[in-house]
Image 1 (spheres, rainbow, N blue to C red):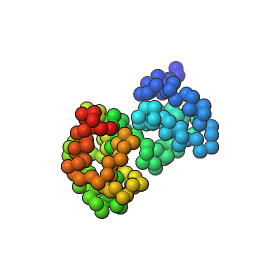
Image 2: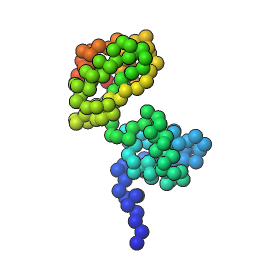
Image 3: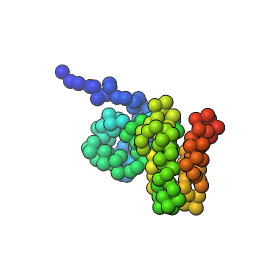
Image 4: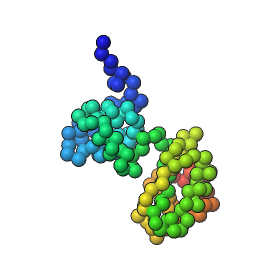
Length: 166
Ligand code: FES
């Protein structure tokens, strides 16, 4: 008897991805665009989805996992509603980003890459965000917060929680 559990037990609805499988699936260099689209749709890339994508576009799961783990933009764990990107590039590091990370980590009660229990936040360390003159910097909801201190970083997180910032 055949097993179709790979189809039926997926953690996300792959119907949403169908148009993009058709658009990028066979295209040269289309894999990254397809994975970006999948992450945009689902917020993260669960392993069962990646295996399903591999099967659908005819590449080895190991190749997809290699791409996903190589690029820091891809998440293999669920992300919170607000994704906080904390810059740890050279300029930000020199200006105290390690201390800011400590304050963020303590306030949120999670380690890097983890989601808070209430599902509101995930924070990730990233390399240079491209606005070093504002260092130290973090980004959330497409907004850049510069000149951070430990206190201002936590204050911004509180504002985001209250819906007063993004
Ligand atoms: S090093 Fe942080 S923005 Fe460039």
